[in-house]
Amino acid sequence: MEVVDRLYEKLSRSGFDEIILSHSQGSVRQVRFSGSRKDMDAEWDESSLGVFVSRGKRILALVINDLSVVDTIPEKLVSMISRMPENPLFNGIYDRKVNSSSVSTRRLPEIDIVDKSMTMINGAMDNGAEKSAGLIYRKEGTENIRTNYNDVEFPSGGYEMLIRSFRNSDSGQEASHAGMLSDLHDSDFAKLGEDSARNATLKTNYSDGVEGKIDVIMSPYVIGNVLTYSSEFFSAESVISGLSFLQDRIEQPVASESVTLIDDPLDFTGIGGRMFDDECAPTRKNTMIDHGVLRTYFQSFSTSKNFKTETTGNAGILMPNSWQLKLNGGERKIDEMIASMKRGLFIQNTWYTRFQDYRNGVFSTVPRDGIYLVENGEITTRWKGIRISDSVPNILKSIRETSRETSKVKWWQEIAATEMPYALVNDVNITKAF
Image: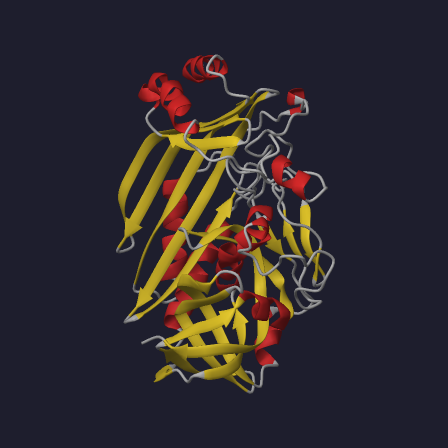
């Protein structure tokens, strides 16, 4: 892109040692519905430019959303970086030449998202919902990353689907995602509607929740939320900063043996698929936790030097991060897990996850869309007014089983693009929500 090339040339002449320009551009189409009817069909273009520069041990990063101002950026960066303190832990950016000829030119499969919205609505209405609301996004674009050492462009995009069904005062929600290599069918969209209606129409009496420790079956949305918010603890930058309970825990047990957690940006059936990280290192599939044992942190080129290891292909502009987490499934189906539960909770969703102590992973989150008390394998009551108040280390160590079924889940800022099973967690701490 001409404006990116112009900015790179100006930055190159401004005395910076290393430069990263990460340009994202593409189109977004949104079909939205409420009251079981389409109420919006809109399309727009999006573009942003991430800029990283270094001079010695001084580093600076910013994001530009208005590309008309790029000609003013070099002078501002020169002035700003001279006032930045040195970062003694900065070791440069990825400097190996990559094979850009292997970059895929695949395109996103074309589907009629208006038709698929109606398929979701009909799936909900046919299963007892009184009304539904939701949306489908279609996102397609390109990522261009230019550094001192590489210049690559690769496709990006996918679909995001959300439906919330209502019956009386109850509701249920389903949210999913699909990527460049997805193979979506009508049945996938219908099932989202059906499952959201099933949660909204499950007839149980309400009762106030009870404080204390109790076994909890967490849906893919709940465990996906917890792991999304916990993903920063796996970042080498968080470990270096002393903000991770995983510090000095490589090759040590940090979870139960039922837990194998993977970051898989090479799975392009999900929208989290990605070919290169933000400093142009090729991405790869990384096993973070292997049957309970911590194997690695998310590393960039710079952080890997501090740990005497290699980059994992997880560099963000400033700190390493996850791309597409997956928690491995287990042996039994969710129905079997519920049927064998003596007493516990089955929680469908959660939000407002907040940390009270980052160093020790202490958090709270507010369950929603169905908090069911299970007694002797049967759902007996629907709880209200509770929050989960626990810690990530305790949750990981207390996962006793995961379901055979896994789901691609993504919702708003609460759940990043992930693939999650149901998870049975022992002795979860429950408190009153208010």
